[in-house]
Image (cartoon, rainbow, N blue to C red; front, side):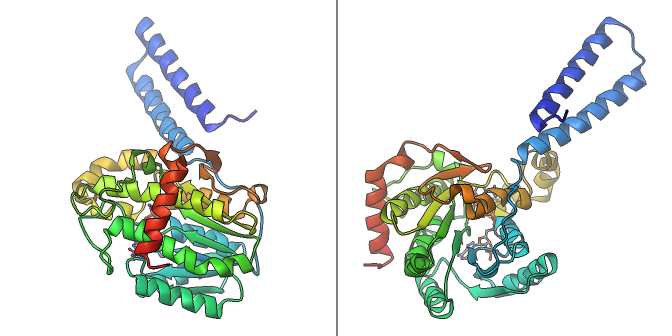
Length: 346
Ligand SMILES: NC(=O)c1ccc[n+]([C@@H]2O[C@H](COP(=O)([O-])OP(=O)(O)OC[C@H]3O[C@@H](n4cnc5c(N)ncnc54)[C@H](OP(=O)(O)O)[C@@H]3O)[C@@H](O)[C@H]2O)c1
C-alpha cells in the first residue's frame, strides 16, 4: 500500500501527537525524543513540499512536427515548459525580449532535451511595434502554428509605461498577449486542431476590471494592477473561446501555483538577502519549483482528454472555478472592445 502526500502528512502529524502524549505521560529519555522529533519534522517538511508540488503531468504524448511558441521562455515557468516540450520533439520558438538571455536559455534547453529545433525570436510585449514585427515574421515563415503559450508576465512593478503608454502590467500581461494572439489567429485556425494557453493566476480573485481607470492613470496600486491584468487574461480566454467556437482552436487559462521564480524581482523586500535568508524555509517548503510550476501548462498544452475543452481555467492539472467577475460575459465583451481599440486591431 502506498500513501499519498496528504495521507503521509496526516500520518506523521498523528505520530508526533502520539509521541508528545507519551512523553507527557511517561518519562522518555530526552535525546531520543528530540532526535525523533527532528526526524519527524524533516519528513513533515518533505511531505508538505511534496503535497504543495501539485502533481506531475503524466501523459506520454510526443509532438514531433508541432510548432509551439512560448512567450517569456528564457526563465522560470516558461523555460521549464520549453524544456519539457522540447524533450517531446516539438519545434519551439522562444519569444523573448532579451536576446542574450534567450540564446543562453536556448543552449540550456538544447543540452537538456537533445532537441536542436529550438529558435529564438525577438518579442517585447511592451511594444506594439515589436509584437507586430514578431507576428509578421511568424505568419510569413512558419507553415503552421499548433500551440501558442502566452506565458510572459510582470508582477507588482513600480509605475511604468509601455512604449505605447499602457500601464506596464496591463500592457504586457493582457494587451500585449491580446494583440499577439489576434495577429496569429489565422495561422492557428489554418493549423487546427490547435491550442492557445494563457498563463493567468489565482491573483485574479483579488482583481477587478476598473473601467473608470483601466490604465491606472488616476491611481496606481501595484497589487491591484497585477490582479486586474490576470483577471483580464481569464476574461480574454473566455471571450476568445466564444469567438473561436467551431474553428478547432481551443483557448484555456491556468494558474501555475506559487512558484519560486524571478517574478518577484520588482518587490524590493522579497529580494533583499536578509529576507531571502529568513524566507528560505517557507519558500523551500511551500513554493513549487519552476519545473513543478510548468506542469499545468504542459497538461493544458498536451492532454488529449481536453481536446474539446475551451474557455476554462486550470490549476494543479485539473479544471477549477473562477470568480463571478471572471465569468461575466458583459465585462468580457466590454474589455475586448477596449483592448481592440487600444491595440488598434480595428
Ligand atoms: N511565479 C508564480 O508564483 C506565479 C503565480 C501565478 C502566475 N504566474 C504567472 O506565470 C507566468 C510566468 O511567470 P514566472 O513566474 O515564470 O516569472 P519570471 O521568472 O519572472 O518569468 C517571466 C518571463 O516573462 C518575460 N517578460 C516580462 N516582460 C516581458 C516583455 N515586456 N516582453 C517579453 N517578455 C517579457 C521575462 O523576460 P525577462 O527575463 O527578459 O524579464 C521572463 O522570461 C507569468 O504570466 C506570471 O504572471 C506566476
